[in-house]
Image (cartoon, helix red, strand yellow):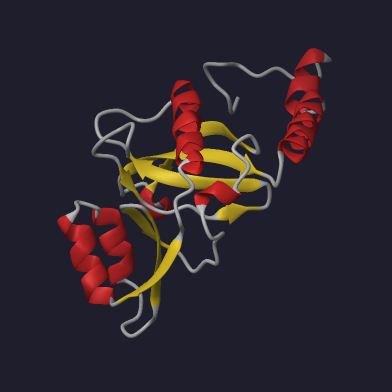
Amino acid sequence: QNLFPGTQITFGPSTDDGFYYDFAPKGRPFTDEDLPAIEAEMRAIIGRNEPLVREVWDRDDLIARWSQQGESFKAEWAAELPQGEELTVYRAGAWFDMCRGPHLPSTGKLDPQAFKLTRVSGAYWRGDQNNAMLSRIYGTGWLNKKQLDAHMVMLEEAAKRDHRKIGQEMDLFHLQAEAHGS
């Protein structure tokens, strides 16, 4: 949001091999060319060593706050949660997001060289093609750079053994760019 004002943040879970976060950028979708600048901003946030503070919010107050800030996706998401459910928010400076947690005590506890944003794709809000198209940024994070480097080497090795690549190289099959399914 610092780099791309007007961007709305939806949500982003962890996955088996990293994490992703969905965004509704204002103006244009994110591209892979945006990732280095986003990583640099993430490292700057880590460098500020901002405390990550857990807060409990009333559902209606949180919906009102996000609606006021123009965060319509978050407001919609919170509105669908059951009345009376404890909603936890983690704050880092002026920025905050709903999350069950737990979190580290501060951003400075992260190794700024131990994460990598890997790619961007499109995704529909809530997986429904009738909803808004979002930009999904994938990444991976580790305890230290050594672990990140080992993971990235493993991904490179796996790509070398990708059946789609090997099959084409060995002329076992042919993919027509104009008609992928034929």
